[in-house]
Image (cartoon, rainbow, N blue to C red; front, side, top):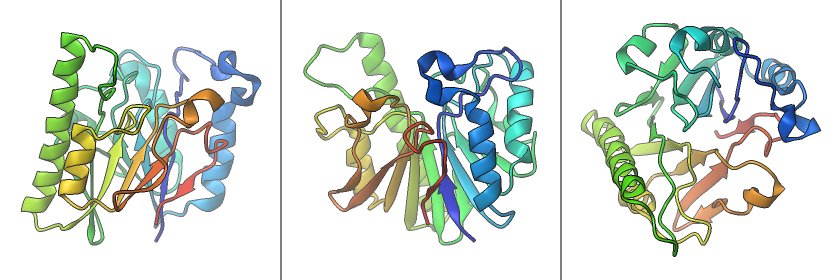
Length: 229
């Protein structure tokens, strides 16, 4: 039983929004993901998907994309990204597929681990952030805490976190997200959002204050899957 991760799938089977406008390496990227996924993942495994799942605007439009994910082997655990406008009622989403689990203010049990998470938001830096940005930043930090605390109340002490946004600013300065992560002695954090060579260095990778951080944007992974455990 293995745990993998791949984020930022940016699927668009309903609305035809090809990703190769961002570079030729994105040409038919879903086929690359499908081939790599189906080659390594078994039905006993699980896959973390940290947001930006579909370009769809509504759930009806997103169904084809979600069905494509559902056809892939393994259990899938998903959180919302900043482009997942189709994401609605968490209760409704969790009734759609037997092997797909949507996390928002809740958690997913994985052996002795609880998989928790939230979308996150851009962490403050030396540029002035807007009042709206600060509101979302505080809300998302609270959602992360709620997710971990729900698992803690259920008796879990080992946590793997999914965020869509990187947990810090580009200077890797402490944020509310890293404070919560360190408070609960989280083992690993999986995140996405960053695309292109110029942005990969803006996210924490490796060990930082005892926590392992992993970037799982699909283009960063060359459309392969990251082995988490």
